[in-house]
Amino acid sequence: MDCTIDDLRTNAFLDWEIPRLKCIISGLDEAIKHLKEKELPFDWYGEVNIEQELESIYGLAVLAFESYLVNVVNYFFDNTRNFKQYFQIEPAIELIIALASIKVGRNFDKKILSTFNLNVNQYPMYPIYKGISLLSKGLDRPLEKIIPILEQWRLDIIDLKYPLP
Image (cartoon, rainbow, N blue to C red; front, side, top):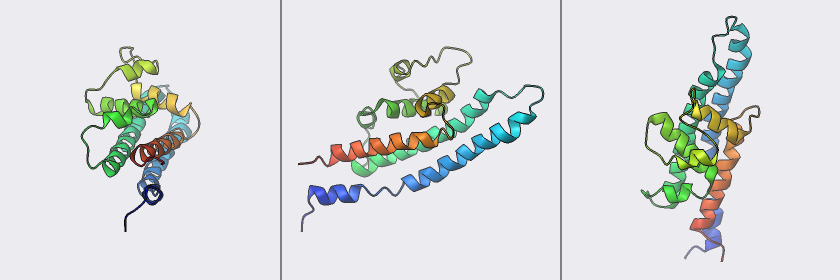
């Protein structure tokens, strides 16, 4: 018995990795809350740089986001090596990949940063902090605000893999 496109699409909508990602991101958002509520109020000498502190937390988040994105592509496209074409579907996804590349010191296409008006030559730059702030629109629990972007991108990947007849 062959599966129909509808059968394949129905199965593809089950995302086993997103709950784990949400747990990781929730923990990082709690770390941000702790920083803002418990550490910053006691910074009597004004030595804590919030952008620098958030850059490190956001850096962990972009690595988790990147891992999720790569796993989605591998799941639907049999361990492809050409991830870029799938990430280019959505500029926000390209930005997340660029930010992850910055975090680990990998080369990347810097054009995506200019798309979001991020200048990596500006000091102090904190590109991961600025990029995540743009994507989350500076709201509370900023990292959780990015997960719907990833979920929508995954739906776009499903449409690409299993187009509607």
